[in-house]
Image (tube, rainbow, N blue to C red):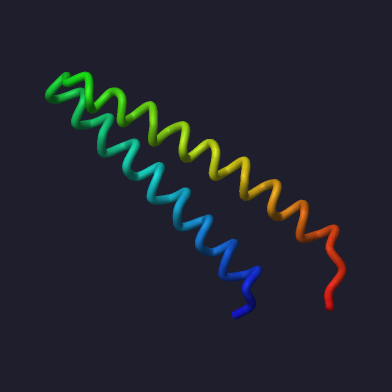
Length: 68
């Protein structure tokens, strides 16, 4: 597995974990109603969006690079 493929795999897994954590904390906020849960929902959602943005930029950058 190349470093590029591993990096893409790692980013994808990180996105899935961030989305899963967002869902988990949202359910916790709905049942308990604590503000810390809401803050974690917002933070993990923004993290997922940032990782998605990073992944798209990474893929575009890898397409423009020439292989060795």
